[in-house]
Amino acid sequence: MEVNLIFESLKFMILGMVTVFVFLAFMIYILKLQTFIIQKFFSEEKSSVSNSGITKENNDVVDDTQLVAVITAAIIDFKKSSKGN
Image (cartoon, rainbow, N blue to C red; front, side):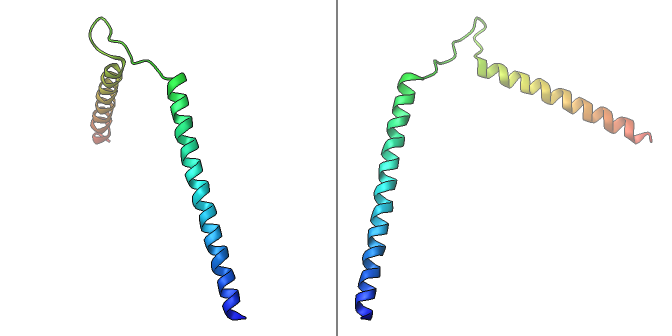
């Protein structure tokens, strides 16, 4: 009796594990197909080089540098004004 229950539980465990494995493999292939379709029909064009030779990404870096400079100046000014109090 006990051997039969252990055998049945092992069958259900293996069936469950195989089912999960097949589902995950199927999901991976569906996601790869979806990625291929999205890249084929909705791909973004590369940003073109402007007249000055600076791309859009480089402009973002320049703007961030200016922002850091402004924040640094504000912190230095705040520290100078708070030392007097």
